[in-house]
Length: 336
Image 1 (cartoon, one colour):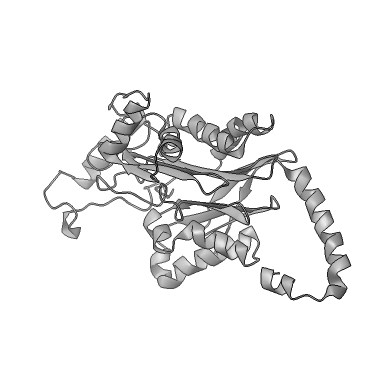
Image 2: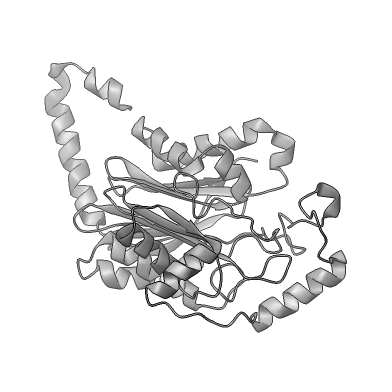
């Protein structure tokens, strides 16, 4: 039921509605606090966030803690251990948003271990929303962050060497022109999608929502490429009145529809988190159904009742949930 239909109900139904709202409120109280995150790698991320939430800490502190946890890990897709761009450079993107619509982000930042914390500094110490590249790094250093080694992790070194060999890539001028590929693949050779962005959303004991996203971006991307992850309204959006959403997948496709903002707007209209995510996926697929078979996008959302849901273009997207009631991984529904 959307908000307009609710307001148009007659006064005769008010006692019943009040009863239902009381039941929903009770269920909501039992489900707080709660944190949800993209992928099965979200389980330890949620655990890190839960250490904050279970002590009645803020959702904002919780999502930052969760993001920091995975940035400390050596993996393909988040943090300085992530796979590099086509020039062999690891660049990181992150954003964070709180219940008051305060937000901060960094994009294309190099050699800084915790871009999520730099994003929070941008939010709290500047009038800006996003800093990029060298400017983001300079800001980080001015605020006490350490310049880390530019060396690739062992896994990233091996993967990059193999990619160069198979694609016969050499840096060239005017690389943006299509004939000067190869470009980043949407899927790796084993069939897994070339994106494991970590997005997480939390609701604290005060019923406030916050979200965070952190990633090393698409492996072997053109140097300077920025996806949806650090863009408010694309990779993350929080509206404390109705809900929050995050995404993972081919960021260009999410940006084209302002994906997470769209999901939250559908929740504003009365759709459940799952159906809101589905409608956003349908918006992407509608543009070109055949093309949509070649990439993956998944949306994950939570409303103010603590209800959550997800939807993806293709099979394989999963998400993790931690609350007072559960600690598990869910398979997302998918469209094609």
